[in-house]
Each structure stands twice: as structure tokens, then as C-alpha cells.
Length: 178
Ligand code: 3AM
Image 1 (spheres, rainbow, N blue to C red):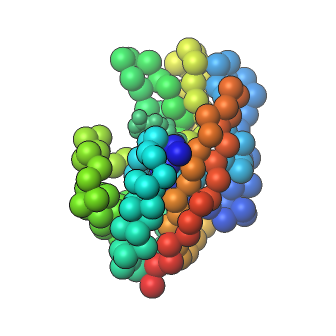
Image 2: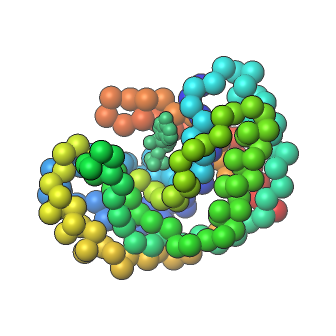
């Protein structure tokens, strides 16, 4: 199974961010609303017994619910090329704390530490050679985007099946936050 841990988003919010998608950015593959999520920790391919251990570790984690606000848009680049267009998240120490707890729990069951810095975001589109000026225009147009805060009452283990056009994400387990 290919797994990741994340926060799923209320449908109202998904519709709100889906409305940001526009035509006119060549090379943008917009994520469909059913796939919007905030990744807390990518796990990757694991055999079933590892998945079970991971599930136990996450179920044992005691976390508290909190409010989260999506705000701003931006791009991630690799090798000087923008490859992801995302909606940002307002700075949130409670979210960072939860992410940290998950990271610790997963390392304790033997997963390799995640080396990349946690940059909370919701991916809006994947980019293949999208023109820089179009991206700059998009970011400028939507930088003041700010959604209503929503309550994060659980986090979720998702499985992901890679597809040609889009992956299919399935919520496998929800872990309640107190
Ligand atoms: O949440 P987003 O859409 O930014 O790109 C994948 C997606 O990110 C990312 O995990 C999320 C759920 O699939 N992902 C895929 N492979 C990865 C890897 N090897 C990865 N993240 C880190 N390392």
C-alpha cells in the first residue's frame, strides 16, 4: 500500500478552493476537489504488516483538535522549475505540533525521518512547463485569498493509487483529536 497521513477538508472549503482553478495556465493539471487534502506526512509503499504497525502508532497518538485557515497561494519549484501550485495555510503552531507528534510516532515504529521541512499546503495543480508569467499573475491575483477557518477534529491515513491523470486517494482510517 502507498500511504500518507493528512487532513481532509470539508466540502464547502473544497468548493471554495476549486473555484480558484482557471483555464489559461498551460501545463497546469488541476487537482479535482475530491483529491484536495493537506499532507502531514508522506509514508510511501509499505507491506500490510507495516501498515498495521503504523496504524497502531497513529491510533495511540493523543492530539488535540484545532482550527485551521487556508490563506494565500504560491508555487513550489524543483531545479528552478515550478512544479506545484498550492493554497497556503496560515501559521499554526497547533498544526506544527500535530505534525511533529506524527513524525515522532512514525520514527518510533522505524520509518526513516522525513528530511524535508514541513510546508503545510493544499496542492491545487501540478505543473508541467507552465509559463512563469502566468503563474506570477495567478499568485498576484489570489494572494489575498483567505478561507473561513475550519475545525480539524481528526486526521486521516490515506492510501493512494497512482493513476495516469490523477491518483485516487482513499481515506483508510480516521484518528480522532480530542
Ligand atoms: O500533498 P501533496 O499533493 O503536496 O506529491 C505527493 C502528495 O503531495 C506527495 O505526497 C502527497 C500525497 O501523495 N509525495 C509523493 N511522493 C513523495 C515522496 N517520495 C511525496 N512526498 C514526499 N516524498
